[in-house]
Image 1 (cartoon, rainbow, N blue to C red):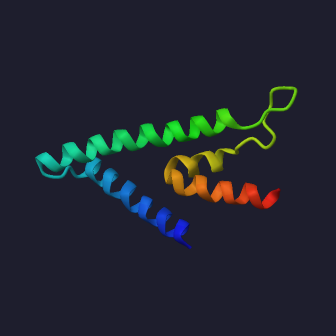
Image 2 (cartoon, rainbow, N blue to C red):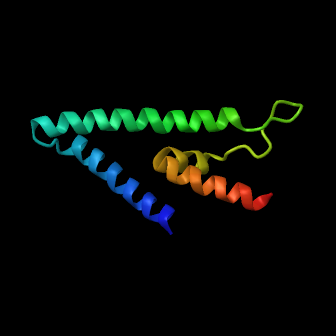
Image 3 (cartoon, rainbow, N blue to C red):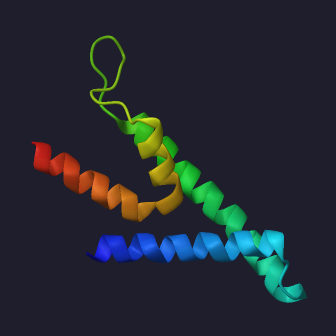
Length: 94
């Protein structure tokens, strides 16, 4: 429940940041939003990279269950909220 609320919040944040690209906000706010967007892109990209690098590999060097493209996009968009949902799903499989 709270994870879905977090995802909704993150969609709102992305919408706010993308709106600034289409219709720039007044001067001091647009600089802050641009910095926040760059920071968000870097952090979500780092989360995705670290998750992919930390997946267990078999003897052939391939991950157990590699992340699909859709899952990678969701992790990039929702960040920690999607990671929590993914972790919960992985624990239920064990």
